[in-house]
Image (cartoon, rainbow over all chains, first blue to last red; front, side):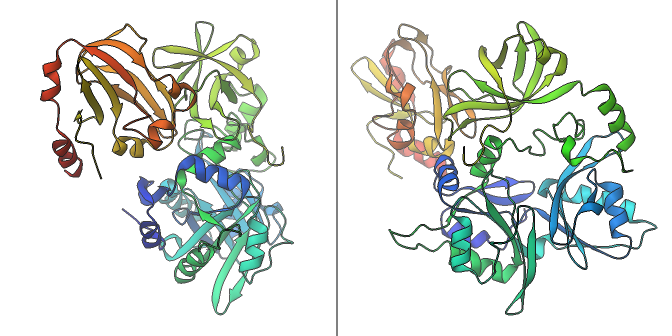
Length: 362
Length: 126
């Protein structure tokens, strides 16, 4: 199994480690709910070094990315990032990624479990194009620092100015010979940053930022993939392998905003057809009665008719309610019939709610 | 890890504490820690029969849902109602305040056939 440069730090502070996409990663340190609440109220740091980091250079890079991405990446200015899907010819989602435009190169951050597939996919479409791809995933550290106290704490402790950077903007440079990129983005529904550093610097920065500041100081505390999952779920953000997979298209997944049907890209013709006809099923937010959690694969019913399937569910620490995301048949959803979710041998009533379940400042 | 000596265990991490013909059943600290934050416990109603080796309920955490097994047969006489509002009691005090059900056992000799604390602890490391 692969490990990140922060592996020893995780073990030292007693993280519980699990296999995630072929990487041995911390699922929690102190408790998933505690880390979740700390992220919503203060600031948490997550090791996300398992995420794929692919850099592209060469004159045909922009054309390659336009060809594989659903988003119109040509509209990205230097210093800006954009969320996109990568589809196959049938419009199925191969991965969801963030593309960033530097002065002299482009970066694609992809899911850990999809990295090999995406690298192969890109290599195939690089043929005949003058593009060089550099997979730096195993050579660097990427951390996400998330929560309302993040910007203040980062400004206090780090020599990089990020206060002026807008959401989905980034800055890059080098400090004492060490390259960095700092992005104003994240996967929790909170304000925050994602930072790419060299492996050695990353370990030093992790240790420095997580040291205890004493009783009267708010500090950045480590949080694991467990809290990352419940945070993104409250924020209504899709997760590959749950809401997204190769048999789902971006429009049914509620991600039409990252698809530009005016341009040509792999899967565009199928997606245009789906857009014209309307998706047959829709990604839908549900709040369940009681405290039982609907897991991935649980069936959704309208009356006695099977109407859909749950992709993710948890007990929301913020709302203190059982929440779930499900694909539900558009026609059944429009019928307005009462929904229920099957958990073991029970049918639990569920109400449709708009996504996200949680918005910061609300 | 301090597995209490005053009760017996199943490999599936339930403890059984016998007092007269009443057996109190719960899950071990190890299991509670593995499950992480427990969010819901589904338990049988008082008066229902439970059978050794069979599932009597379910326990849910943020991470997963697991079946609960008992190692003794009998009739449920009491369920821990506090868990409805405070399932975290199982995380915080799995051997005492976080107990799950009490049963009136039909065959007290089943108790001796369950794992001792030492045997339970030994197979954890295995």
